[in-house]
Length: 375
Image (cartoon, rainbow, N blue to C red):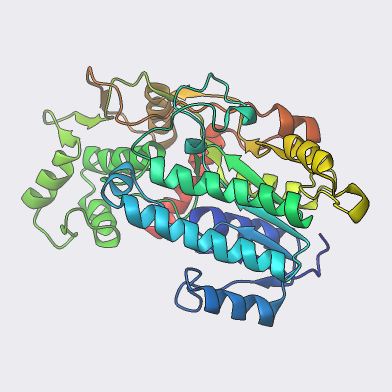
């Protein structure tokens, strides 16, 4: 992948796409194509075909998707499955038709069975049942992985897929109802610190930027105290502030800085040894050859992760230190809702020569600085 090649980043406003776009710019790639959802609806097959015909990208990062919280995946099961399938079908299909040199498809940790042994290996794909809550999203992602595999075998395309760990970074969701544990804890502890310092200006600024249940910084102190208290940020006496972490803190997770995730994707796109293509010629197009090729290509996404996991309790304590919050972190007897423990086996990626650069503490510091600037 040369610096002047035309690169299409699908979904550049999302967490993954925006991170990939930022790292591409930083690395000096100058011919990058993007389209917002208003400019191009990737669920529209005709519009997608017209875009590819006009732009003719050399490389495609497919990060566009419909994704949300556990609650959203529960309530919008049909929409999540349908919309993701439509986006993937159109982009992957048009990439093959217009002879894209290489495509990278972003999967998700939920593609692996809930019962898969840790650390989760790529070969665990399709070996057992999925987490039912995320099943529609996971099925769509599995279909994307298998579509890349199928096009490689049938048409000799060079389409690869990756499964990044839970990643965090700029453009994260800080909604206290829908966000993932790490950004949610940063916001809750930030509000706790502001309450601890009696800094109502900071609290009001935060709520004006990101209202909670319709409550903004224009509300009176009593209303604000009530709404942040509902989400576990409250005074317990005249001096101490308590932040409820949620759950017993024992659930463990793997957290990857979004810049590292993007760097790994670009590394894999550039790496000539990471090749999804199978050269099928008339002489090699026999049934036995295709069966051998299919076996070779089966379940070959590449995990991207840190190889480290941390408990939610330790994560909360690390954020507390970074934000210099002096109050109390509270836990309860219940496990955190949802399956977080998806520690990936990163052997395949590490053997190719890539490892993450940003530690969890460094990532939290960077995300906190970004959050303050955006508040």
